[in-house]
Amino acid sequence: MIREYKLLIGGKSVDSSTGETFDDINPATLENLATLQVAGIEDVDRAVEAAEAGFRVWSEVPAPGRAEVLFRAARIMQERKEGLARLMTEEMGKVLPETRGDVQEAIDITIYAAGEGRRMFGETTTSELRDKFCMTVLRPVGVVGMITPWNFPIAIPSWKIMPALIAGNAIVFKPASDTPLLTIKLVEILMEAGLPPGVINIVPGPGGSTGKAIVQHPRIRAISFTGSLDTGKWIMEECAKSMKRVSLELGGKNPVIVMDDANLELALEGVVWGAFGTTGQRCTATSRLILHEKIKDEFIKRLLAKTKSLRVGNGLLPETDVGPVINKAQLEKIEKYVRIGKEEGAAILVGGNRIDPGLPGYFFEPTIFTDVSPEMRIAQEEIFGPVLSIITVSDFDEAIEVANNIKYGLSSAIYTENVRTAFRAIEKLEAGITYVNAPTIGAEVHLPFGGIKGTGNGFREAGTEAIKEFTEVKAVYIDYSGRLQKAQIDTE
Image (cartoon, rainbow, N blue to C red; front, side):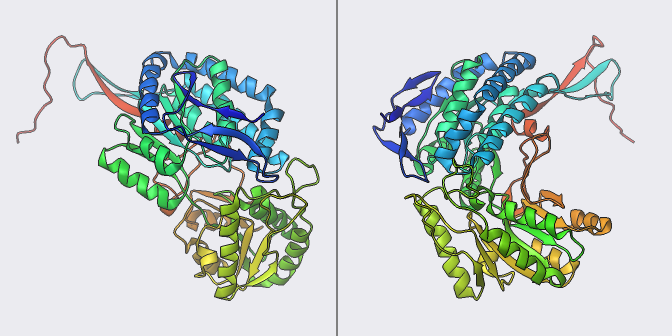
């Protein structure tokens, strides 16, 4: 029987007010994995009320005590890692080695955030007056609204949830409608580990209704969102109306530069993994390959052979390299961009079509375009699928100019054996992340993650920077002189 999931509010499974449901579909087999209830405005109100009650309890727990809950949750996730990974492959489609990595990332950020429970440092400084002490302390923001995408259904929620929890906040969470089960399992694990009722509340539903209700709710003090640029702009405008804090992680159009002195075999592995891992459905995916003209022919020859060897199919099978795309709409979007690329004058070297691996799901061939100019739409717009565009350049300066000629600024990479070239690229590439001799993917939880330009608005996830997203800094002045003191005024 297909299980129906209700809302999670105040630590209890409750019916929604809408009476509406949606199905969670396996993108490889089109089987229905679960049915979920849709949360409405009234349900978001109930979730906020429960979160406020949870916040009053959780924010009073000392940070090291909050850390103990996270440490226990990490141990439970480790014990259930394989089951969570298999469920993710069924729900999202990507291959098992990748979903195991997704779960491990959730484990790692949970342990990392828990460790920060004993490092919630403020600062001390001298005062301008005698017998006075000055310092800063970190305080939680309050009730935080979170909205996450479907492509990393346990890692990205964990990147948001764990720093917010260790800082003492409560959460109203809307998971992606295509992959809600992993978030539900994550929150169930946190509650099993001792998280008090109401600290996290789950309200599934469409972004246009449930997500909108979260963003516009007057008692939610901050929004953390990962998704599209257009939606991010709308969220920022809405949050500005109430001076609500907002953290945005949006799109990417990430370049890999391969210079003429690069290790071509190393670069080849990085480009293929960066472009076609997760079926290209990453904000950090390698979508533009910027090739030095001197090695273009040789590199493309190797790239075609490697790409043609990739096996597309069910991500649960060990022989599969590339799984399905997430849904029919995404499949049609990829097809649209393939048509656009052809109309713009680019040439397909390989792929460009749906593929039938013996399953009814949403499968698309790994696709490579050549003869791409930097201004083409396939070189400017985020496709979010297994499509790579090759742009040829004559030198380093042109490569940097092409790499930066986009509205996004998330990830970037360069392959070169010249240390001077590498450091110049680090300085000049307009991106929040730069890899040297590695693909545009592979973030680690102790480093800040985020982008510039159209990718983000300044906040960073992961690393110690993530704590700043969910804390307020309070200045504290302590006068132990026993008398009223006034700052000296220069009257000269």
